[in-house]
Length: 390
Image 1 (tube, rainbow, N blue to C red):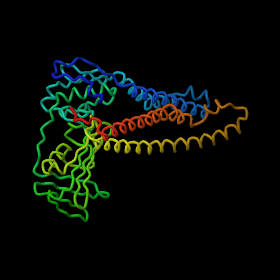
Image 2 (image 1 turned 30 degrees about the vertical axis):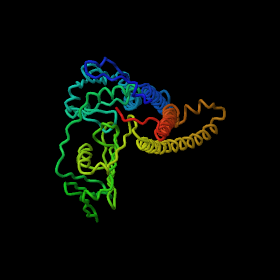
Image 3 (image 1 turned 135 degrees about the vertical axis):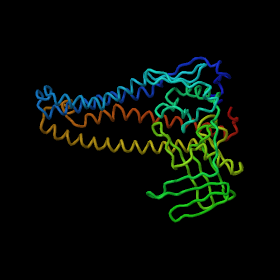
Image 4 (image 1 turned 60 degrees about the horizontal axis):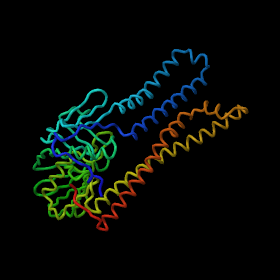
């Protein structure tokens, strides 16, 4: 049984019981590791500096203390403030609406905003956007709470949410980067699709479209995560990603909601296929899409891990060279003496205290999610009760 089946969702705003949610411990734990690693990094840098300058002159020099203060200001203070904000961060649901506190003040989005179509969906499956708010506070995401709490908050919000109206224009123009500064321009109208660019000028009727495949982050999401329009001699691929709370598109032009509605209004359902990345899967193809997305994220994770591994190897080589020089000049020196004198102390602190635990957790989490998706896909493929989402 899908876990969402056991979640009781209120039918009316008045039935929403007040509940408050804190940031999940995974994020807080990672910030603590980052703070410890940063403090060790700064301590190592200060210690190494004191070895270069005479100890007495170093600790009694105003210039050196100003340098230490500057290092602490640009490294330790931001990490500490981020940790403090995570402890203060709250999300709350009640009969009034959805509330968020980042530091001291609460921000409230009444349920009327959700019902009146004033709240849009973000590019991620767990975010809502209020276009009337300033850019720094117009998005409320629930990804930072626990898994079961996140699903509860999302389902309550979607219970009272009405998609904002989409005004379809007569013509859509999409500009897509091609090579360097060259752009491929795609113009869609009631008569068909025109593709123009460097050395390209083709026109297609709507009947030429072979397939429209839309991947949504969630079934009720009006936009899309990726869209593929299959034409006789080319594919048009569009994708939306979220980087640090900002939507990044592979095209410039109308937003995903407009593009999706425009194409669905002109392409018959028989040539349209949709898959979802979150929520109760309807068919094995939904889980195929989730597995493929997970594999793509895993490849990106491995690429980043490879970069960290190369840095670790470089630091290890540097440490070995430094250790050889140190013990040649200090035959009676201890490993602790060497560790306190090496310039690589801060880098090892960052790698061992922060990077290694975070990457280990992510690796096990990828394996866990993949195993769950493969088991669920096998169940659906065997006809194990695939039901339509609520």
